[in-house]
Length: 523
Image 1: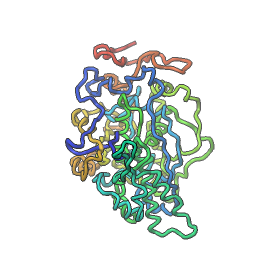
Image 2: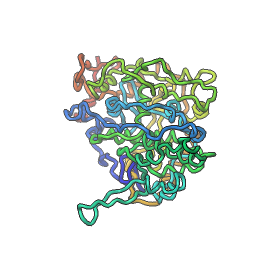
Image 3: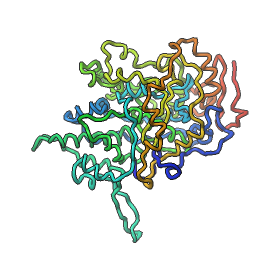
Image 4: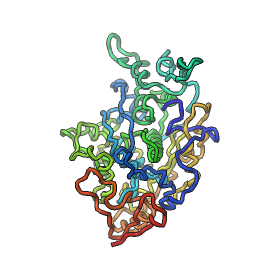
């Protein structure tokens, strides 16, 4: 994130509102009363455009430049970030992500697939990455004179070396004046500053150097994987306020913050004109590969994580299974987004791994990290997800099938359209100082601090008898079909036949007036 306004950023009251990307006027071309975002503002409206058809979104490359060191291990375990630090590099598949983005609905925070709504939940964050999903919300001030804290926690003189430099024109147009940013740390400079710091030669590193290196490593994780922004070259210094005491740190809800950031990134990426995608795209790809067969690779060897480690704190997370050399069962790159668009449209119930973690969770002892078991009680919390200026909501009651429970007809969304739009207008701005986001969003922060008080109560376990009532509701309210017939399927030998359903479907004709789009097709 740079100090300038970012897609996933925010400011305070009237001063902190930015452009959410949504037209504030209600449009007659809304898909349904549930899905109020105008169709012509959603990226799915572009699937027939020649300049978009196989482009989709452009996610930032994901890599960390500061190497993990075993001396950092005790601190990373206490912070709840150890499992992610052990995952190897993984290449992002932009065509797969683009196909998923087209299915995302910002109103429900879910992917609308032919089978039903699905989404990334706190359960997925916990099992895939073993991040803490309980603890204090990640919030507080985002703008202040961070240079002092940078020097205190990363070493004297570090601020002048790593804080990002802002460019502006000088008195003469030919001149360029650079001033130090008080907000963002340049990732390249940070990596250069700490390269080789823990090398035992010529002298063993001191305990303070290990702490400084750990903080720099965590910042690199945050800026590269957890909270990557659209620039991809910086990380906000504000995260250092949570990394002061590494010996007995406060427990923060990093999993909830990452999920909030991902939800917001998807809500931005789904807008028609957006090309770049920021946020934890690795998590999104891990989720897709774990639950859907679409684009899922296979390992090139018999490697598997060391699940069942005798120390439950050090067990690999489920997502570690995807961090090895792999290839694909069939080529898909030649068709780009069209391949995944087609595969997602053909998705059927039996193709989905509804409970991918169940077998490992039921084993005694559990093969996943002990934190996963300790915090599974909040998987069904219907609460706000907090990351400074970002407030997004977790709706497990819309995807109960993912937890093994019956899916009742979803209740009305707790927030009206106007409130969602208001929250999406919060963007970080370097022009606003001394804003404490915990105060700005106090009501939501209080709610997020008590997940146990907002648990969804399952009615019964899932059975096949639950399919028809929900499916009938979903076909009248959801976006289960993004195109009709043989349209927009390129690079495939056999075009997708027009979809038919034994209980009827509501066809979605992109760009058509409402009276045309609400056409029911039956056998």
